[in-house]
Image (cartoon, rainbow, N blue to C red; front, top):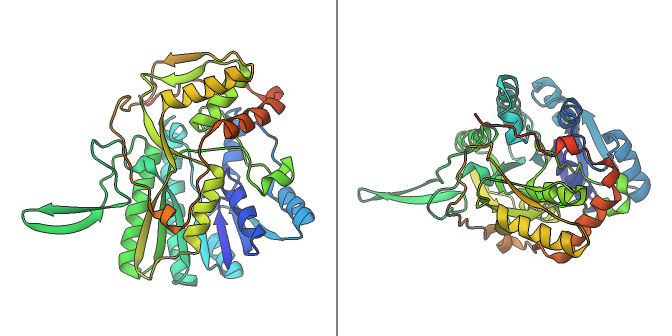
Length: 382
């Protein structure tokens, strides 16, 4: 198949480009280097040095004899996006190209405004580009489990049947996000569902939980191919942050009571989930929704796993509770359904000692690059 990956320079985007290329598909990637530039602006660059896309593509081809085509540009520029669609003629579009950080979206007016414009216009442009170039093209959109919030009922897989006054109907599961970033993801889902119904598009919306991990099978070929591993407060996910904090001798940053519970998955499983979605497309006029997680943990449980592993490996890991800078429930019910991708063949990589040991080992190799000032600054929701 011909794949177009939007956000090809990101933590997941570059790994996805390699994963698809390794399996013999024709891959084109787009990125505007937002995260690279923002990381420089906020002095929170990734732990492992990452060459730019042109350099990584050349290295990938030298190692595998497989080509990935790259275009540097912004998908909020509709004419640029149209031109790439015309040249690449994709069968599948994988859309990662959004401002991906809840803290960034809550910093100030400028970052909030950028988040809204970037995320919503980017998705709208992608929808229109598909309609005008190939309406049968399958759009895989990376959503987030954060769309659902933390309701006091079981979270179904995208949809909910409701009986009201003797009548029944099926609706998208109610959503109540905890940040502006997550709210734009809700708006993405609503927009996609509208255009699926109106134009008969084929869309898979992946409600992904926080991702952890440093390497994939393809990235293991050379350290320069590794994903952009962030550990800072703006772009780092919680488990990745905790492991860097443990190696750096910084207390693990538990916000409030630490009972915040979410669904997590290994970056290797993100590759599986995206590929399974691509090879099992929806029908014309269908919106498939999968909850893309493999396990659920509270922040306290993750901190216990990291401290236990870290202490076993010889690190003196301290756990500290901080006043929660976010507006969120710290002790709540959380029971999401996540069976759809397993039924398609997902073989999860669970969070075990081997996985944690491997992450500690890589972080130790790059310990000299840890910027302690980027670990915690207390970005507040209000």
